[in-house]
Length: 429
Image 1 (cartoon, one colour):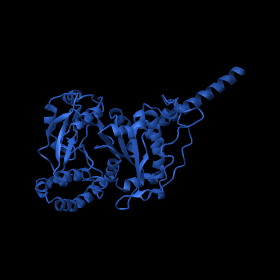
Image 2 (image 1 turned 60 degrees about the vertical axis):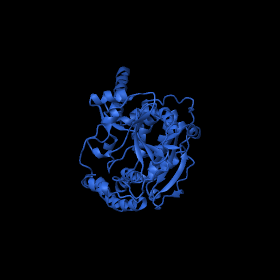
Image 3 (image 1 turned 30 degrees about the vertical axis):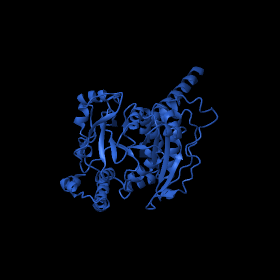
Image 4 (image 1 turned 90 degrees about the horizontal axis):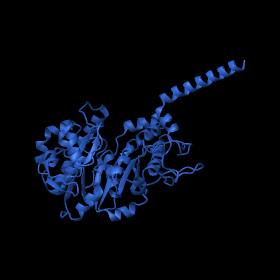
């Protein structure tokens, strides 16, 4: 009888184990969080304590308004521990912007950028703010360069208080996240958003230019390198750029273009210009947006950059942009006296290129630097755009008609020469 009883108990235990295994297989993120340790945090967490949450003392019920009273802004909501010192010792700061769901790109950006980073984050709801608290806490614990050099600014919409609230997550940080997998960590946290919050995000355009201006103004250095969160700088960029900018002899109306390339997800991020060239020969890298919308980056003249002298020990000017395209929107370094991004443009279409266009009309010259570059993961394919994106693009196209007239009056420079040559291109943008 005893053997039968033990066998029955064993069968029940095995059945329960199988049920749990099947459940965990259906919920891999939770399974991953349960079985993976949070590496390297023994000195930051104690068994009976949790890490202090990021933005714990931030009150989002008040803040300064943007110029149109559409969004509330919290400048310097969370300071990097060495942000002031690194800003004083560097000539250039990385300014970048993102929504909460794309913050998983920051760890790789920070791995290559060892200098001040000004990060503007859009939190649409209290749910997203709580997710932001936990994920930024996670990043600051796992990635020392983020803890030391990344300063965060927040922007919230007027509907923030109307959207669902989320009670603080009731668990310690220890044992829940793994420092090696920021993508999985954020994906698990994003499941906390309600359907109502997701629907709000789908209905409302992302305020890209508000975010860019917020990130720019958060930089405390002479020069600002403005990017999007998924644009990864080449390794060793900060010391190389600082060395170049110390002797740069053009201090007014100059922009230094950093060429951007798409990198196949099957490849490793190239550690040098030579490594990038090798990937291109294998078909694993190519100029950014080359297949999707070539005019986006065409004026950079990638062929000239690739054929220019490769010296990985110092930055130099490869060439000057001489064939400016109306829809050109490079990632560049400039003094922050450059024109602001017009905040009438929200969502998709005419957000970055309108600002670069104004720089061109104002007399800026664009110099392409080598051997530094930036990368964007994935070889992009041209495909049908969702209806909401095309709607936003059409709205911004009409706004641009007003914007271009204002620019003509402001700078007493006729932009119509460019507009006429690119008339048909606007229709496909």
